[in-house]
Image 1 (cartoon, one colour):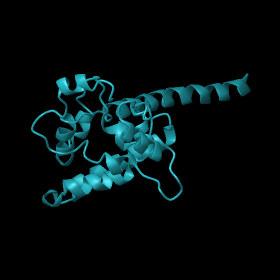
Image 2 (cartoon, rainbow, N blue to C red; image 1 turned 60 degrees about the vertical axis):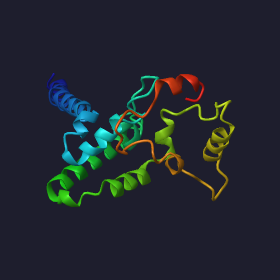
Image 3 (tube, rainbow, N blue to C red; image 1 turned 30 degrees about the horizontal axis):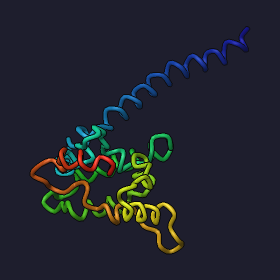
Length: 185
């Protein structure tokens, strides 16, 4: 009887400790994974405001690609996702408290962020890149990105570098134009 008691005690102790720790970690990940949380730092507020007027937040389909969709690996790559989220979070907090905000350069930081975005992050949402019957040039350009010749690799942001994080006075799409080009998305 005494031999059974010891493993049962470890299992019970593991459940009592693991469940709250897992719950707190999950709650923290969910709460810190929103664009509004990202915008709570004044350095990121500019990126948040320019994102709100882009087609990644406002488009005729109603789909919203938030910060994590572009700046972090896919969540199904669990280890990479948690590592990247933790790394970027710690880096942003350290910079928030140690950096002179008057020297914060939005353009330079946007370019540095674009260097870290790979095609797989774009293709999480943009899957049907070759289904553009009325835009042959775009279809061929996407084909060259999806199936590159050695030495000719390109990134999505090489061509699409002006979609997000540029100041605009109004929203980035015109519903009437989108209705006429309904096959373009």
